[in-house]
Length: 161
Image (cartoon, rainbow, N blue to C red):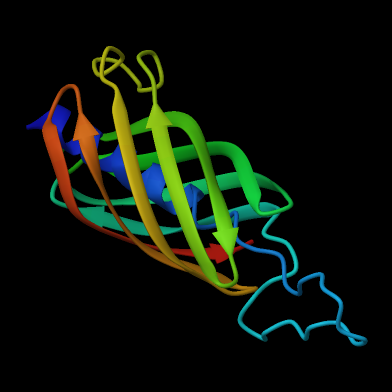
């Protein structure tokens, strides 16, 4: 059960980080005037994003520190979740993805050694999609954990810090 909770937290952390790396507004073309940027599309998702995530393994929090280059992004993530009423576990990994308009695709990964003991041997991989604005990322995700199996029904909401 504790490993399932850790796997879920990792999944949530990864899911939250990726949407944070959203899109650039505007486009290039032969038009005489530039395309306007949609109010819901941030010019850059570079920075820190933090918020809640929940999936089949339970609730948690995620923080993404990301850098956007063109339509791609990458960075680090931290996830924290409860293993019992008084104990928490933290995992650290990476997030990568791409943005097109206000839509993002992302992948989260926590490798062996990324979680606190006794879960240090656990790994998590997650992929998802969502929407991003200049202040928030909302997404859904699914994946798997080497210690807990399938991760499903993932949802995250991250706010720009």
